[in-house]
Amino acid sequence: MTALVGCVPRTATTTSSTVTVDDTAAEVPAATSYWNGLAGWQLFTVVPSGGEVTVHLVDRAVLDEVCDVAELPTAHACTKGGAAPTYHAHCDIYWDGISNGVDPFDSAIASVSVIAHELGHCVGLGHVPPPSVMAALDPRPYPPTDQVLIRGIRH
Ligand SMILES: [Zn+2]
Image (cartoon, rainbow, N blue to C red):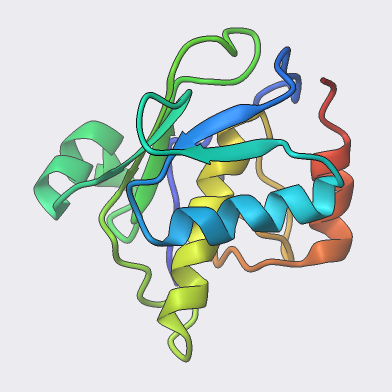
């Protein structure tokens, strides 16, 4: 089972109509499309650089340090900054590029789940019980729940 950390529940509020995301990982466009489709509006826009959200692919040692994963050694990503009440602060997603254990049968889909989960944190979503892409452990896309979450964001 894969754990994700850096996941302090936040008040789901944005003051922007669009959150720009650096396209630094191949999974980013699919993850943003997932949320945009459920939101029914262009919540996330992928940009080449300078976005409000940056996805950093880092090695394990960096992840351990930045994300403080000592208590959750199986974590593969975390989020720093972003969301209310300091939405305008830059949101950084740190990810080791590994998603083993989330979905051993389809690593590409699992990787998208990890990025979508962290993007959710960047716009203020906290954890919910599974099934949901915002589940703390074993996040998987589950549109009925995830749509309620993303449509609950005030903007
Ligand atoms: Zn989380």
